[in-house]
Length: 186
Image 1: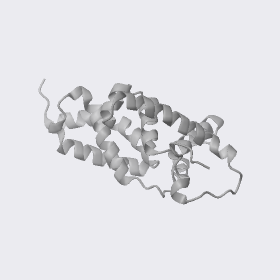
Image 2: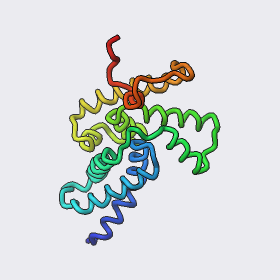
Image 3: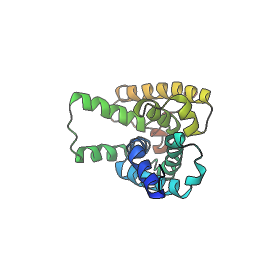
Image 4: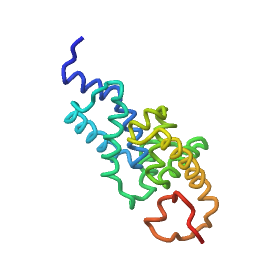
């Protein structure tokens, strides 16, 4: 069967849009920004479609493009409450299970982007580590070590609100938004 260029593009969108949107939303923390990122991703992907040599690697290739666009849109000063307000506007109810999910999303927004992306790919998108390595352009062993560090950073981020006293201030707004890879020396 011969596919036209338009039908191949439509197939990419049908097969990968939801995956890319979820990933972009998790990386940026904003649905509106994620939609822009995914649109930019498909535009770039189509422009450089000749670079994709193996169609079975389309998802990893598209993720790599989306990731670059997400980091261009990334605003570290963006308030974490914006993404929660956005979720509330879309009719999210505050039940216990949903509160736990929101806690995870908030914690994800507080860890470094390199950790956030491996957690999103592995847990949200069920991507195998070999495909993650291809998408992130890193070695498979590096994927595994980033996953281990990311799990620790997420665990710390999830415990952080309970440990931080009410009304406590942080050192700086830039440093406050991200859980560091290693603990600082006293």
